[in-house]
Image (cartoon, rainbow, N blue to C red; front, side, top):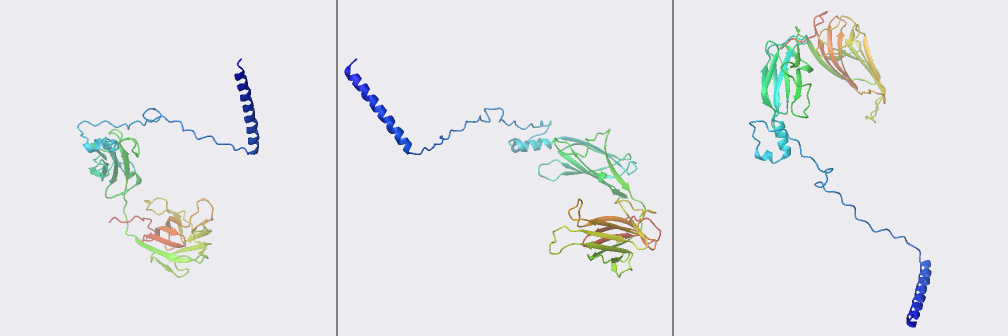
Amino acid sequence: MNKKWIIAGFLSCLVAAGLYFALNNRVAEIPLVKKEAPPQPLPSLPSAAASPIFRVPPPRLPPVPPGVTVPPEVAKDPTALAYFLSEMTPISFYGKVVDEKGTPIEGATAKIGVADKIFQDPTFYTKISNADGLFSITDIHGLSLGINVSKDGYYRLPQSSQNYGYAAGEPSSGPIPTSDHPAIFMLRKKGVGVQLIVKSVSSHLPRDGTPVDIDLEAGKVVSTNTGNLQIELWSNFNQEEPNTPYDWKYQISVPGGGLIARTDDLDFVAPNDGYQTSDANSFTAGQPHYNRRVEKQYFVQLADGKYARMDISVGGAVNILAYINPTSGDHNLEPASK
């Protein structure tokens, strides 16, 4: 081996050894600081076009009915086109009007509103029920329709109005009616009414139980123990903290007579019995069904034998709307037809 190469190799080893010891001594003098790894680029996500997972399917539009021309400005907008085609949904509706006993009513008016134009008022139609109480409307189109039925001499009921959706997703009162199974609309026949005394009265109520006497026939507050209705209120209401719930109770009394709850707005005949001299209720702050005001309806039997019905609201004040039959012993509280 060449002598020069041996000497060069020996010198290289010496230099490497020197650098090693030098670096070891230098590192010992400098505190180690852990370097954070440089941020790595986030992995790329597949594009919506490249991956079926991210692809949004186009809206499923109903077919264009025969003979219908889609306006060019509507055809360019998928959302507008969807509404337009939904409003082209064919509608055939069948209804039947009966009274509370199920007897068909002839000559009832059915007012029908059809949602058939985007962002515009409905188109209205009027139909009259036949001798079998039946009416129908066909050969129209729209999203949905609403029907209100009425007739002179009848009271409207919750079953006098209904709504039906024909386009997909539209709400309905029930299954879409057919000619074999029409939608049933109910009215209640009015009875023989009488001329009633109608009075309203309002008054503040003391919170310490001091009675407030009311003359229903006069429609005013009267002196103690001279009225035919008495209201008492006990309340822990704090005027400095008006929004804080408080304990309270009330009592409604009919001196020499009685009262009984009225549960049907169209019940106009006062009961023969079951009356109680007073009715009371109490509320405790924080308890379920807590209310600051109560609204109720009563039949009232007055001390002089007259009968009345009244709507009453009780809280910090009392508000009463009373209907009194002026004939003693007459239970009829249905108003005379105008």
